[in-house]
Image (cartoon, rainbow, N blue to C red):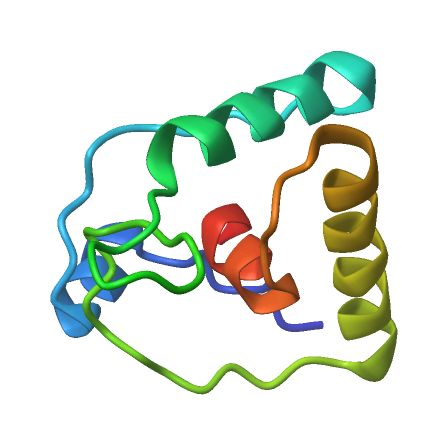
Length: 99
């Protein structure tokens, strides 16, 4: 049996032209969801010319393949954020934030 190789986060960041800034911990449940809502509200801003709110530091546009089940779940979460909190966020913006 072959052992799985570990991912080298520094190498991945270098290849993507990114900068590592520390560890991110994901929490589940109500408090994790509230943390995500707070993150969205603090980072996403409506552009000066109008349009959908986004993180102004996002400058790259990439295509990310998703399973249909994953996209369905992202749609559900984005819809729920809109209905319960009034936050308008596209499903793939949510995916970008979670990534």
